[in-house]
Amino acid sequence: MNSEEEFYDAETGLESDDSCEVSFKDALVFESKQVTDGSTSQENGVWERRKALPAEMISRNNFSVWSILKKCIGMELSKIAMPVVFNEPLSFLQRISEYMEHTHLIYKACSLSDSIDRMQVVAAFAVSAVASQWERTGKPFNPLLGETFELVREDDGYRLISEQVSHHPPVSAFHAQSLKHEFEFHGSIYPKLKFWGKSVEAEPKGTMTLELLKHKEAYTWTNPMCCVHNIILGKLWIEQYGTVEIVNHSTGDKCVLNFKPCGMFGKELHKVEGHIQDKNKKKRRVIYGKWTECMYSVDPKAYDTHKKLEKKTGDAKKLKQEHSCESEEEHEMSEGQETVTVIPGSALLWKITPRPAHSAQMYNFTSFAMTLNELEPGMERLMAPTDCRLRPDIRAMENGDIETASTEKERLEEKQRAARRERSKDEEEWATRWFQLGTNPHTRGEDWIYTGGYFDRNYTDCPNIY
Image (cartoon, rainbow, N blue to C red; front, side, top):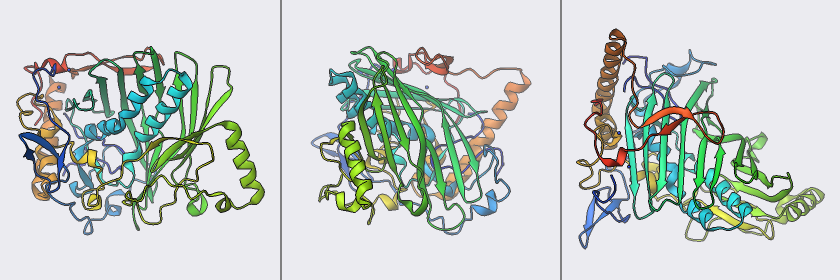
């Protein structure tokens, strides 16, 4: 295997050398029902989304990450080859689309008349966007240059297109929009990753932009740092940490969220705390919870009173109201997982969707993730030939065929390298198809902007990357 391609990272996919809006009047309409065995089925003539992958996760017990990464301590890992067994059967472009799992929060924000109330829900959406990474220690496949992924959910009222717009450095751009022109959500991600001996750290460089069109508001933020621990020995686990600042560029409101590092004894693991302030810097609400469970909002005075009492007693357990984000039937969460202490007067903003019972045997995928690589009936003739659902290596891994997955992955990467050499020989620059490098109108920073036209379904000039 050529060592120019990959890297082990639980949050992002990196490289792989080289690498396409259908007005949906041309597309089929599907219901988001599911079956239990990973196969497609029909009920009363309506196609149902699957509830499982075709095959269970491939065992990694006979593979050593340390043998590959031991010479890379302190390095940015962008050209380290990893066995395909450490992947999960999704492209990084599909992993990005998991931001849309909790789109109902965007619609909720659109429905609210008060800007502070909208900011609360947008903050919950920003947290929910990273929740699917919990226990996802498999590495998504690195997108090929020019690779695309479209996600259309008419039942949820949105569609998304993403494209791998750069290979060195690896940059993935995406654009999602409401079918009724209620919102647009877009951004580009350049993951910088380093290996520190026992952990891999990912810095997801890039700006997320959410526009609520009815309110003429634009919110921007960057995602927190992600770290995968116990790379060498022990059970892999993930933490998110760092400060996330969400800015409403129309009102001047701001939400500052602190994703807390684990700390000694793990007391702060997964915790998120922050506040919303208005344009006059007056603190209006306190936001707290866990990115793996739920998020709450409470009045700052109630929060301060709670913290003072907590400090005075010196025993937070005495204050617990025995409230939990979990209902009795939602016991799929890990045993012994600490629940969030609910402060009196709090409002629940968001609660994670429980994962299916067989998730651990299927790369710890959520129910939403299970459906992303599924080829819906009739879609193959509609979507671009660059869509990652057509990648034979990912399809083989999903089907449990590790040998074919590895062979196909190497073939695609070599094809990409050969295409790059040809462009270099002809002094030809790679041209992106659906995004152009430009300026984010809200942050004034460099960003990849969707140029439109994908869903017109004209793909005659798309490259042959598979």
